[in-house]
Amino acid sequence: MALSIGVDVGGTKIAAGVVDEEGVVLATVRRDSPATSREAIFETIAAVADELAAQYDAPTVGVGAAGFTSSDRNTMVYGTNIDWTGARIADEVGRRTGKRVVVENDANAAGWAEARFGAGAGKANVLVVTLGTGVGGAVIINGRLVRGAAGFAAEIGHINVVPDGRPCGCGLRGCLERYGSGTALGVNGWELAKFRPDYAARIIELSGGDPNRISGKAVTAAAREGDPAALECYARLGDALGSGLADLCAVLDPEVIVLTGGLTEAGDILLTPVRESLDAHLTARAHRPAIPVVISSAGQEAGLIGAADLARQD
Image (cartoon, rainbow, N blue to C red; front, side, top):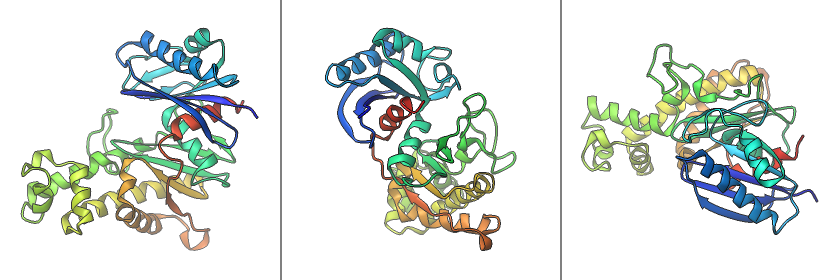
């Protein structure tokens, strides 16, 4: 049985685990992330890998990293929340551990785990969409993770859904993540509170009475109570997300769409408008197999599971 070590590197924590060929995590180690020092990050990744390697014979290490990772599976082209832009992460960690190391975008790693061992298991063509502060994801076609020519594939959150729309942190306008993320949900609530405060009274109340403090969490809490304004916020988000997913389906033709991330905790409050919008916007929908939209099942360790499994793929 070929074991592999996966390391999920975030801005606040580093989680590592030994993973078998069935996606089962045999042991885990966690450390605080020294996100402001790249040398300290390399040392911490190597330390957790060495600690696990002392207990298990695992010849490969996969590192799931936030940012734009190169197709060489080594270089961080642009780090989004950690100071390691330009770093050759695999070389640095490999030199310290003596193991074969590969680097994957963290959303790709988590998405691969969903496709292999989670809600997409048994399917060869899977679209995984991560819904949190922003929107990310992974694309699996014919059983292979799509990385693209430069390694930048599956930046799902930055397809354009509203020309010249809300400004995005990427420098463009109208990106999907400005309309289909947890942050966007809060913006929807703020807009209603600004122009229709009586209608949005419950959302404002759950935000401490201050419309400027409205967040996606407050909108979700109100939606769970059946508040019409909050449900409208979800309807707007679902319409944008479903429309964007329909565009992706026209290109990728997946067998299933798996939604993951914090926003999916809303369950059917999210799923219902997304499914309705996808059905309304999907090309040739009357002549093609249905594309189910489901919530992820791989759990909180999906990032390290996917990173470990990808490290032993090739």
